[in-house]
Image 1: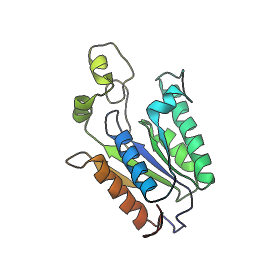
Image 2: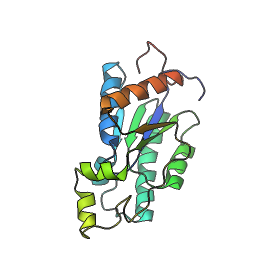
Image 3: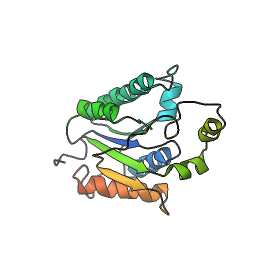
Image 4: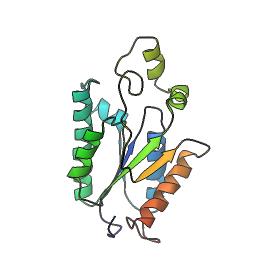
Amino acid sequence: MSEWPSAAGVCVWLTGLSGAGKSSIANALAATVRDAGREVTVLDGDAVRATLSKGLGFGKADRDLNVARIGFVAREIVRHGGLVVCATISPYRAARAAVRAAIPVGHFVEVFVDTPLAICEQRDAKGLYARARRGELRHVTGLDDPYEPPLDAELTLTSGSETAADHAMRLVAFLTAQGVVCAGDPI
C-alpha cells in the first residue's frame, strides 16, 4: 500500500460468516478511531439491510446488489476523505472484488474475520443457523449458501481468545504500519 496522509479516505471491509464478530470488531474499531479524534462511519450489514437494501432477498443477485450498494456508499465516503468500516457477510468474491475495483488502489483494506462455522453457530445471536437447521430458513451463508473466503485479504483475524477490542487494536496497528495513518496522528 502506498503512503498517504492520515486524512485520506479509506474503506476497511470486514467480511465473514454471520456471527463471526464483524460488527463487534467494527464497533470497537470505530470507538478507538473516535477516541483518537477522527470521524468514522460504520456501515453494518444488518442496518443496511433494514434501510438501504430493505426488500432485497438472499439469493445471489440480491446479495450482490446489497454489497454493491454498501460499496457505493463506502466509495463516496472514501472519495470525500472519510474513514468507513463496512461489516457485512459479502459472501461472494466477485462482488467484493467489484467494490475493491471501485475504490482507488491503497484505499481499500479487506479484512477476513475467519471464524469457524461451529463457533458462529454457537453464537447465533439472530437465530439464523438454528432456524436453518430446523428447515425454517434457506439461503444461510455457510450452510446451504456458499461463503467464498477472500484470497487476497490484507488482514485475517481469527477467532480465539482475542476480544473485539484486541482485534480493533490489531487493525489500528496494521493501518499504521501500512501508512494509512501515521503514528501520533489522529486515526
